[in-house]
Length: 293
Image (cartoon, rainbow, N blue to C red; front, side):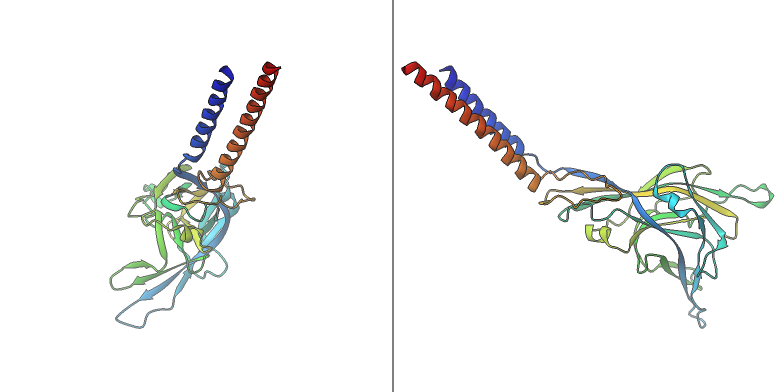
């Protein structure tokens, strides 16, 4: 009788193992998508004047020293200095950095539920006469799907003074909607959610970038960027396959809680349990044969 009870216990453990393996439902996952590459770029302005022939487009861009320092949050900074021009930009008012980040590191069936843009940055304004610094309203760190991943296109109406970005803008640390003012004079971690949620396809698009602009000329304003990254929240309920492995740099990706992984766990648990049942059954039969003899 004791041996039969023990066998029942093994069967109960097996069932519990199967239930615990199959009932691991998907939950909300959060992953940090770190920067992978940077490009010092430009902006292109198209002027609209209904009263006369509009002037030609204006391309601008300022110098950024050590732009690769923005790839790692380590206190080593990329220095935005729009006073100095860059190649291909005959005019300049700001410095522009276009930051790519880890992509295709979330399973294809996932649904994006939240995106937060992070930046660890600072900005310094040198004003003549000792006046206090003035907030620079064009400071930004936002998620953009660009026509050209190295250039922001916008238009400016000379009659209405309306400024329109001719790109797909998801948002982030962008004034005046979310972010008002300038970064601190010391490196400060700031973040804001996007205003328009991208789909996973848009998030993985090769032309989607974190657009960062700091500094201003004229005005003697310079900026520093330690790093910028995305915090992405998603639902992996529909995931059936694990996300692809990102080798360089390593992605911080939560393993899927459904699909292939769960099936594997169930099979392993089942095999282990069946092995235990077989061994127990053999022990019972051996004891019975000995008792008969």
